[in-house]
Image 1: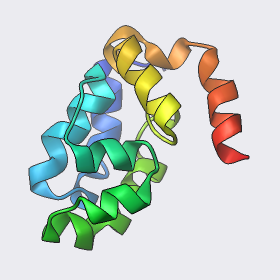
Image 2 (image 1 turned 135 degrees about the vertical axis):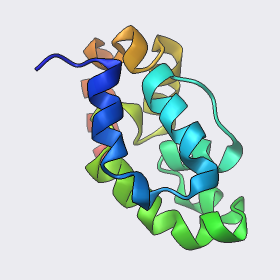
Image 3 (image 1 turned 180 degrees about the vertical axis):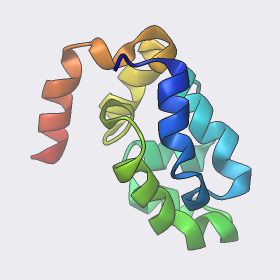
Image 4 (image 1 turned 90 degrees about the horizontal axis):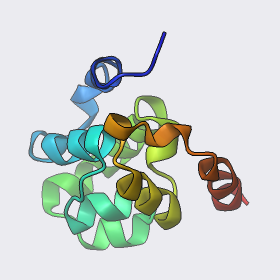
Length: 114
């Protein structure tokens, strides 16, 4: 199966219930098109939980564990995990521009895991 906007949109829709309604558009647009989001989501995509938690509204704060489960289980591996990964995903334009094919992600993900 090839990776397309439609296939990834279907994949992330399966985890939709884990994302608060007011965050869904920002999550979807980051994943599919590499678009910037607000500070809370930017921190979550960077796996910066301290800044995500301290910058969250009440609902986002309560649902932060669900959002992280969504990213881990439904979002493309290459769209989140560190600031460098998040920024490269945005620079390359998300799924729409096949950002996941860039070989730099492997070394960035390895560095983030270390």
